Length: 429
Image (cartoon, rainbow, N blue to C red; front, side, top):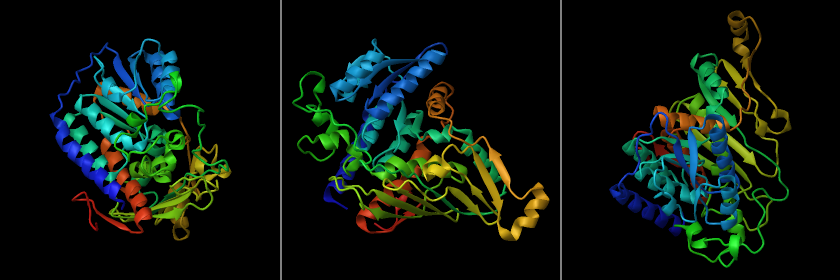
């Protein structure tokens, strides 16, 4: 582990221990009162979150966007054009002081997720945070504990957890149709020969940029290592360890979290990460092909294998002692796209029993396709009003981070990690 990464964790934990002294500003929301929302981070994903909030505004009118924040003036201006009445901020610290604020969305680089979420929670605000929940496992535990302490709603942006797909799959598992589940596997693969995450760089943008090309680089860096402005790091942050966990935090989080819902939301006990930077040669640090592997106390194994330079991934499935559930998924490659059915196929020793019980050789489960992202945002706002647990709450986000972050650290440190689920600590540091 790098000295900086160790120091960053210590600094974060020191900050988090002191943070509860901040006075909370949250208040109850009246039945006929709109939820006042601040949108923090207005890049590609943040702009999409803003559009989803505005979709809610148009559909139910129970939400209002009152504040916008981004350290890049061009992005801030573009968002402000969609919501002319919203107050704009370059620093999220100032946005969190906005009068009457009830909730925030966070779509920043990963290294800012925990600090902003904690600051928002300490102001008494509800939080919708894009995945990954945090940059590190240690941060995730602190955020989970703070959500409990402040009795706030936090939704982590794994949109599939609001689809009927995973509720139906969980029902099949709990009914024992598959027997004892022993392994799950999935993928999130694609092939971009231009270099995945090589998003457009705006010429002239930076700390010395004029007008809307101005970027507050110091604000964007936050607690990341200090360095001169680098447009590749700003516009393509997912390529660098200081701000991202690469494939694991961006892509694997979307696969691991649904499996936690389908089986059991528990910490894994043994975690490994493998892969490499096999093709891309553009200065990035994170691998272009990566495997997350984990064993769970419930006595099953998980593997998620992905590549950014080959679109054909392993078939997504849940494997039981009596039957296997072939899920189908758009990220398996062309053969998995536009699939909205799952197949339950008996294991050879149980074919006769399966036919006797079900009257058929396999079960086809329909209506388990992609339902889009809006349902997840709507679930967040509904829970802000009802105080019910959201579909990807902070406890789910934290336990998923155990597999995600420790697979990254395993890859970087050439080490398999053991985790004690009861003590909630790494057992072999």
